[in-house]
Amino acid sequence: MSHLFLNSKKMKWYKLNEDHTVEVLPDGEYPKLGDLNGPTKHVGNTFIGNQRISTVFLHFDHGLNFGTTDQPSEPVLFESMIFEGPHDEYQRRYCTYNEALEGHNNLIKALEEERHPDFYFND
Image (tube, rainbow, N blue to C red; front, side, top):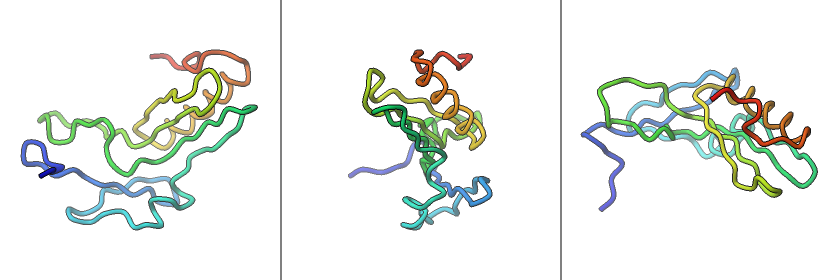
């Protein structure tokens, strides 16, 4: 039997609102189908030649530390991926909408300049 519980704490689901704020859904509530594939899911979707940069809202914490520590941490709720080209399946993750939008734009700039996707990130 598979459960999404660690240390007796339930995994939290999140919703991205139209104003780009994030809300935690109450325990036992899950995103509606329209939230999973609606227009607020995409932060950006850009093509550079045959390469696609897709940045989306993920709906649950992909930091994967839910319930595993007593130290609160900001949930990782956004992800950019590159599809096709020399950086196929490259990904970066972010905690906030603004970080995701900035990251998406950094990836666009790097690919337009034929640089490595990490070029404009300071980590």
